[in-house]
Length: 167
Image 1: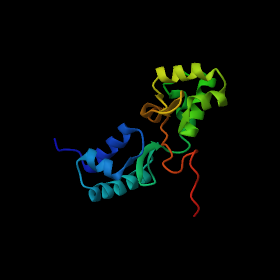
Image 2: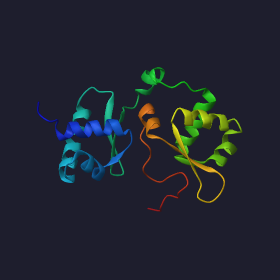
Image 3: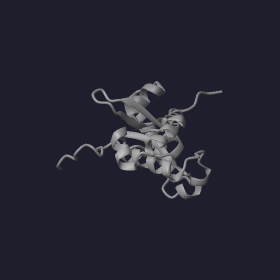
Image 4: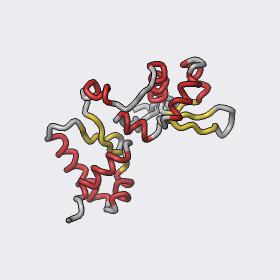
């Protein structure tokens, strides 16, 4: 049996990573050179664009990801393997919007019930928590499991806590 094409290997990498991946990282993971990866990404993106597929290849700030096409969310929302209360989902949505948030700020936004939500989200591995280098709170971020489960790509551009540069 012949080895899979570079485009097929890239598709597998994008699927398994569940987050946007740079061309350099794709080249390293696929054991290929950047130019060949760029050419294969163009072919793979065009292939997805031409077929009737629920998935698409998306490029954001030089990073590529595989995600559900817009409009597919309603179809699959009942299929997601997630058993979270509405309040916990809202806490998770707040974390997703902020990309990275201090636990103390999250509790200020969502109320003291957020402590229970955080425990549940940690237990289901949708978030990670790391102690602040200075201070007593924790930084909360999303995990790759979150991105795989919800099939969304994180915004690579300006974060909520960073000002946009003037054009």
